[in-house]
Amino acid sequence: MMVIDEPYGASERPLVGLLAGKATQLMQAIARPSLVQLVMRLALAVPFWKSGILKWAGFGRLNDTAISLFTDEFMLHLPGGPYHFPAPSAMAFLSGTGEILFPVLLVLGLGTRFAALGLLFMTAIVELTVPDGWPIHLTWAAMALGIMAWGPGRISADHLMRGFLLPER
Image 1 (cartoon, one colour):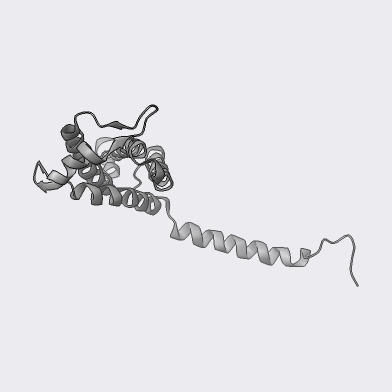
Image 2 (cartoon, rainbow, N blue to C red):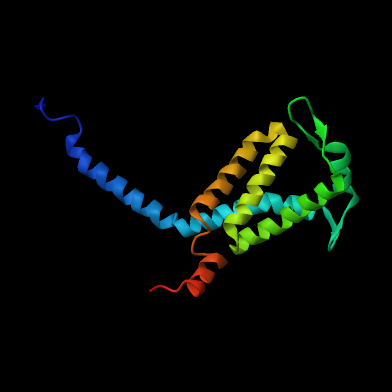
C-alpha cells in the first residue's frame, strides 16, 4: 500500500546521501588542493615552454625563424588593423625569454604568482595575434588567474621559502 504523505523514494534517500557523501570524500582525497595547484602550474607551463624552446638556437641566441615570425607572420589584430609588431627582434627576444623563464618559475613554484601574471599578459598578446585561438587561450587565462588567486600550493619553492622567512609564532 502506498502512503501519500511519504515522498517517493524517501526510504532510499539515506543510502543515496551516504553514497554521495562517500563519493565526495573520495574526490576530495584525490583532488587535494596542493596537488591541483601543482597540476595547474604544470599544465600552464607546458605550452609556453614548448613554444619558447623552439625560438632559441643556443644560449641567448634567437633562431632566424623566431625573428621572421615577428617580422613577417605575426600581426596584432587591433581595431583598424591588423598591424605588424613594433620592434620585431625585441618582441621575439622578450617572447622567447618569457616562454622559457615563466614556465620554469611555475614548475619550481618560485615567484609563482608573478610568473602566472607574466603568462596571463603573454596570453593576452597571443590572443591579439591569433584571435581564432580563443578557446585554448581562455583555458590558459583561467589557469593563470587561478594560480594568481590561490597561489602555488604546498608543493612549491614559494611555500618552502615562506616557512623559512616567516616562521610560525
